[in-house]
Length: 271
Image 1 (cartoon, rainbow, N blue to C red):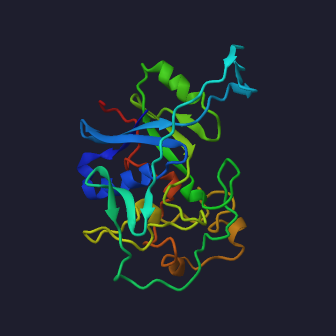
Image 2: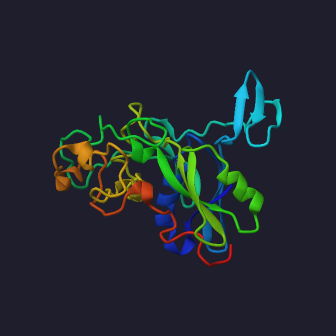
């Protein structure tokens, strides 16, 4: 698959963040490299999501749509793609290339309140019913697929929900979809972000900008989110929480609903 990240005119600073965010979601996606073409930045990727019509039993496979039966396929080979390399070293996108970099903790900047991560212990969950860090476990992707590529589109639409779902075609050149694929920068508690509070060599935050955007109040939230009425019980002091574990300035964008390219994907433009 070819996934679109954004337009080159956005600049390398912005695209480094957006690409780091996308290439961090390694649970069910293998990323094979970045490339620029005709003014856009793309990532070659393999989406490890089975067909919804595939039925497995004792090493045998059966297509529930057409009735074909045979030996179960092996599936695509997975290769390790660690994002945390130990200590202060991480694999991030830098200058539009995936590279190992030392990312020390910031020694300056605004003080951070000594409060617990507001998302720790939250009953938020993704569509696969896994609880915790829902914002870091799913994402929206833009798959390059023209209207003529009917076989590719059919394969995408036949993936097993909710691991790949809500497939739409907003234009002639691409498909939008939602995926469940956890971020490789999650800490051992599977809640905290290991990039939080770290910075790049040029002083930029190591944590992608998308991860520091707060969700719109009571809109587009995961079930059980602490920002929703059912998740918080009492209204949270958003001004205080902005300085908490997830960090960053307050925003009206929800990280899981954000479109990487910054505009409606699949518009009327050549590939």
